[in-house]
Amino acid sequence: MSGHSKWATTKHKKGAKDAARAKSFAKLIRQVEVAAREGGGDVNANATLRTMYAKARDASVPLDTIERAIKRGTGELEGVRYEAITYEGYAPGGVAVIVETLTDNRNRTSAEVRHLFSKNGGSMAEPGAVSWQFERRGVVVVDRSADEDALMEAVMEVGGDDLADDGSQWTVTCEAASTHAVKTGLEGAGFTVSSAEPSLVPTSTVPVEDEAEATKLLRLLDAIDDHDDVQFVHANADIPDAILESYEG
Image (cartoon, rainbow, N blue to C red):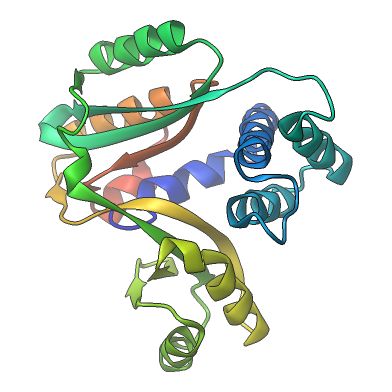
């Protein structure tokens, strides 16, 4: 699951269900609110807000809902104050996992994330134990129908660093701060972008080729990702496509 992670792709397929969609909306709204609080409510001056705004719109979050979230972030409307906390741990098979959360209760979230790790065969780790195995990068996912040579040329022109074939999609990586510019540039060149966001990309991966072991890992990742306070889950596992396709959660 390098880069954007193939697990994330299978997760997004399940996201079409109404309940999952509602939960996704809530997480996106929280991300917009925090981005506005930390960098201001002007999408042109706040790169993080611009990215989260675009992500929310791409997910069909209503415009007025996004605007209210921005106003809560800037203090124009009353709202809960969220704190960003990152947790690190290990999944079955020694796979490194990083969990990014936004919470209004640090103690509750910490206890619940720890429980999810232990309940699903993993364990929490001290800060810094696994984060050195990841780097913050921009990840732009392009529809698989794009011609590789034409896409590679466009990637170089718009400031992307690398292009990878993930089987069902093309994954472009770039500097995290350039994510929006690369997305906009590729769309302007006629390519269909399905997602674009800064992400933690593993610098090396751990092969997980046993189906039973992979299933345990995927269930842990799904359980953590399903928590209301969890915004992003990153893992450095490399799982065969056949296992990912057969996984039903």
